[in-house]
Image (cartoon, rainbow, N blue to C red):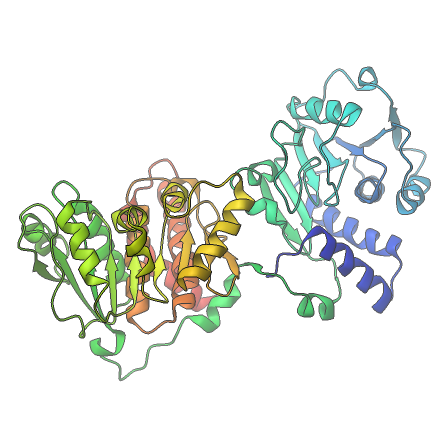
Length: 503
């Protein structure tokens, strides 16, 4: 699903109005109807509804929703913020359509607000939409602060008021802290960013029938991964396939006290479907791997406690995953430097392999094309330098992927896949329970296993992050987010595959 900018969304509205054709007022009615249908499925008419409207089209959506809810028996009150700002034509018409039975409160100063809202109430935030380009001030900012202090549930229409859709919202700005955001047709890029996404709460995309010709033709570097995409990416298994059909992967990692990391990666690679797996560890890890991952073959380094070499013959492997528990010893760094001078199978790099790259610019320049890197934000900034904000980080991601012809999975709540061609793909699976040690090691194993099976780097990244998050979601359903640990992820990986195949 393409992510559109605020300007592109306005263009999509205009195209739909012209080509369908439909009036802007009727398109607003369609959006409000979709919002109300969603609400009616989750909130009974016993819930009082307070609708706060600004003078623009976002306020017009709120007024239309208020009328439709009233028609369905909801107790609705409307609050209009009046600061002398001119109202949009569609807002004015929807205000005229309001039945006289709906109480309309006109707010011209902070004292006009009610003393408090009941905790069981639902607030519809229709103050400002996605076209906002400057921080809220004056009465608008005061109303936002007031609403954020109320115990009621806040539902934002399209986007939380005060939040910028396509740019960093200035620090300290007044922004609605929504419990739920119902956005129209496409999510906003801000919902997927670490610092702004929290304002949206739980967000849902409501289709409102914007014209498919426009949506198909419009260009956007940003996309959200949806479940249906994996029906074509995930390959069927032939009846006559054998273990050689699904590739031979090599995982290299582990150091004294960190053998758990490479062990989890090995389990994940196997659960991801690789045909054969070899793991190279320091000598102190031999018994651990042979005992805990009996399906894997084990090579041992000459060194007892850390890695100091790679196998001489890498031609038998279809993917090489490096990093979990790797360590940053000097002879480990020298081994990685020597490795990059060889002809290599596809690479997946994580953890200390990334830290060694970050510390050596010349080593970064030797990074083989189509490598997959999986940094968390701090590891990423060691590679690129600090980002001033989330949107700047995306620019750094684009620059890095282009310069090194590589794929980078920037891990987070909505892990973002950066590509050499400048496209970004945001993941939609996963949950806070995955914020636990070892989750990244599992992802490395999944990616290594998929890449060894012949998936392209982009397919491996897309399928890998989606499966990783989906396994986390299935694990959280079983054990809860609080108790989720990294081994749950590979234990539920099979269930994640089944859900994709049978959906």
